[in-house]
Every structure is written in structure tokens, then in C-alpha cells.
Image (cartoon, rainbow over all chains, first blue to last red; front, side, top):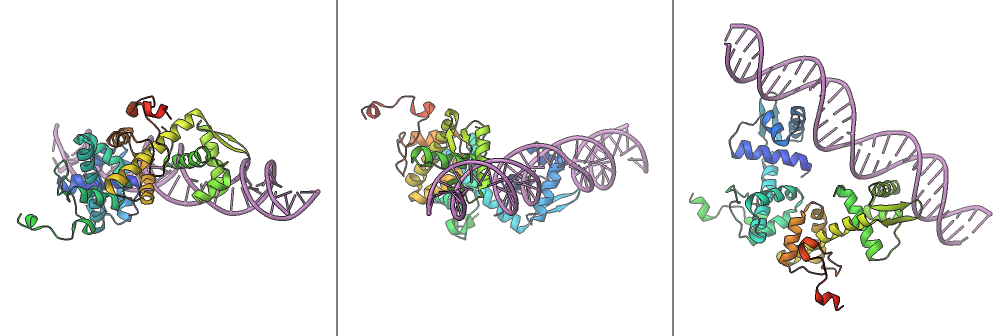
Length: 150
Length: 150
DNA sequence: ATAAATTTTTGGTTGAACCTAACTTTTTAA
DNA sequence: TTAAAAAGTTAGGTTCAACCAAAAATTTAT
């Protein structure tokens, strides 16, 4: 996964807002969140496009590529499982857990995240009730019977 | 603690080798370890001197300043407590735990490290039997009775 | 004492992340 | 429906960290 930590931050934010929350996110929303000049956001989106993570269209916005989705989910999986560890094992409260997880998620190995996942029985959702994406090597490739039953 | 992650890596290495293991470490030892050109090491040592962490003397070597010792111990405390978490809770073996801890220690908050420390009863040594430095806010400012009895 | 090894200096490069100012496009609302 | 406002982009930068190569200086070992 050859994205920088900053690129990863942008990806996580955009995925959450646009894909999960259904906002049509534009330059302003991103610049405001990261407290950077709009020009910086434009640059970033262009870079993420070049790297094949987003499809960027001038003045319009972005869409995730298949690859971008894979990477974003991987990052959010890490983030959310870290939250669970912090809350369950160390009794962090949700918001503090989220903050700390944000600082660590990029640096945590797949292995460690999968250990957390196993330890907590492959949880389906995080503290904010967002989905914890599965990793085939950890949680199996298919949803369980229960999931299928909607 | 306004050192970069790379500076922190150099500090940890030098502290371990020079202070803990008693080697007189020179440029070559450092460059070899980090696989960088000697010029890079010289630069780094000069920078750590400027920042008040080391006292650097041309062609001779470095000594830690009081401040440098504080920072190095803080970093190594984090590293070693992370190792313990990984080994105890996730059953990592020593070397893998060390590797993963190296990637995370810089980014982990004091708070989280202190949580780990409390959880494991303020352990005195890490997996490699190196000392885990105390944090006053976590472990108290004085050695326990047992420690004093040598 | 001189060759070999180590270290330092000088003068670069690269890449990430950010900015300002000027410009363009889109949206809004008069 | 158009002109002003808002949003977004482009061009041309800056800063900083980390690194390197080549040449020079110093130390060490023979």
C-alpha cells in the first residue's frame, strides 16, 4: 500500500463522508476538515487520481476506483478495530479511542489488526456502528449465515 | 517532544548501544545500522546536538544531554511496553513484537502506554530483560520497597 | 610515518505538503 | 438572465526532512 500517511487521511475522510454517509463531497468540505488551503486539496485529489485511488473530475468531484475502495476499506478496518481494542481492553471512551486510533491506524500491521479482530470475535461494527470490513485472511471470505439473512 | 520519527529512531539506537550496552558508538556503527551514507549520520548527529538532545564532538562521538536522556527513555518506555502488550495479549513472539513495536512506539500516546503499564502491573523489564523506565504519572516517582532492597 | 579506515564538509537532490495570487467555473439570488 | 458570490483550479512558488556523492580532514593501525 504505497500511499503516504497524509494521503491515507484524505482517503479515509472522503470514503466515510461520501461513500458511507452519502454526502457529495467537494473541495471545500475537505479543505475545511483538514484546515488547508483549497489549492492543497485540489493537488491532493489530483495526486490520488494519478495514483489510481480516485477518479477526479475538475469542478465536479471524485469517485473511488476499485483499488481506492480496497485501500480505504483496509485503512478503516484498521482504524475501527483499533478503536475496539482501546475501548474494550483499555476502557477508552469512544471519542478518545477514535482520536488515538487515527494516529495509529496507518502504522499498524495487517497482522496486528487481524489479531485484534480474532480476539474480539471478528466484530461486525465499530463503536460508532460503522461496518468493520472483513479481511479474507482473517474473517473468511463469505458473510456468515446470520449476515445473509439480512 | 518535537523530534521527528527518524530522529527518534537514531536516539533509540544510540541510547541502547551506548548507554545500555556500553559500546562507544561511532558514525560507522550508526550508518551501518540504518543503512545510510556516513554523511547522513554526521548530519543527524549534528541536528540532534542542535536540538539539545546530544552533545556531539567532531571525530569523537556523542554524549546524551539530560534532556536527551529523558526523551530516549520515554521512547524506549513506549517501545518496551508495546512489546509486552503484543507478547502477552496477542501472543507475538519476541522478535516480531519488537519489530511491530518499532513501527508504533513513536506514534503511541503517553496515555495509551500508561494504560498498558497499569494493565500489566507496571512491569520492570521488557521481553529482552531491559529496563522499562518509569513514568511518574503512571508508576509513581519512587522505586517500590522491593526495588530498594535491591 | 604512511596507508587504510573513518568521519566531516560542501554542495547538492528528491519528494511531500503546503501556500499565495490570479484565474476559471459554477451557483445563487436580484 | 445576468452579475455577483462562492467554489474550485492553476501556476509558481516555499519549507523541511532525509538522503547522497565527492573531496577533504582526521584518526587508527601497520
